[in-house]
Image (cartoon, rainbow, N blue to C red; front, side, top):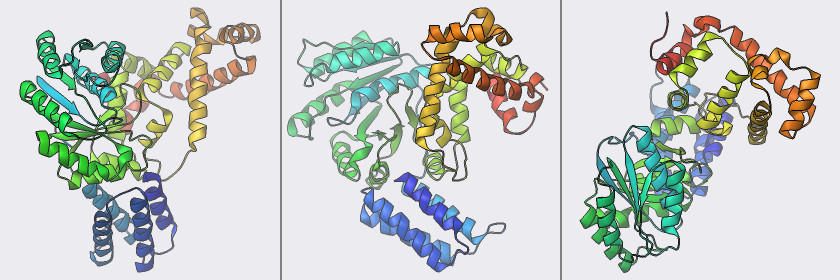
Length: 439
């Protein structure tokens, strides 16, 4: 969906004039894309009407061309269409109840949300009270162990309310307790009664419905039903990394009066983010999200690493650390989505290919001695043969690694002493990372 809207805007931008016919064609392209993505037709026509009226009738602001004005209107209308405001997320002691039907990704989201609060400095524990799905507790326990979160469950107990009571006692020292409730294929009477009882005993501060982004406008119906049952405080929409119908789910929830608080953007524990419509629309239109990228960088790069990078002391150890940090920030596809590329597309297969190469480079560097990583100039043809054999690759692969290292090293020498970071966006980025930027 989002790539097609971006394509429509790029097509509009290439036209010689931004007249009524061009605006009509742009609106038709957006309409087709949204309807194909299972967005409610009434909402689509409301959005279309607003774009056309403002694009053709509003006075063009000083400093903007008509084309830029139209793109700005589309941007603002999409933000309004998909939620308008970023939600407030409480970083305090609280109990959270997660609800949802089968296949929504509720258990995986439980672990992701726990990881999110842990990264914010809060101790966190999770409770599995799904007594219907086989191995539900085992799945949550395994996910929790991977991220060092304490999980409570009792596979022998068949009363979910008792599990919640016992879990609250077992995790009472935790600041944030997240309860993974049971799901069904539909919100039947049995599930309704179970969730009401859990809600009464837990008295949660947050009640979040987990919805899969690929269900489209059906998300609005589910949001209404669960909201009437327990009074939702928000929703989390998963599978937003690949779903063509994600916009349908987002707009349907907003139309139903239930705010989206988080979105799931992948399979890894860190692949969850606060839903900010402004940033979301900026990314989908190719305008990037440098603030979001900076936040990710701050999470994975310590002040000490930032200082090393600024110092210009660059060797294969530093190069290895850079690749590790990039890997922790997510896939190259996601990172590129956050950069303002002005509509430039880098084919996904090329980014995936580069991601694979970076993984191989780490294995090759693991086959090097400490001295070689500290002094790369020592690596001659004989050492290349040994490194390739140890890493299970061919010598040309090692040569390619060294070629890329030298290119990056040459660039980093220009930044020696941090002089190049004292102006422009680099300054702000490294001030945030390092905390105290040297003038």
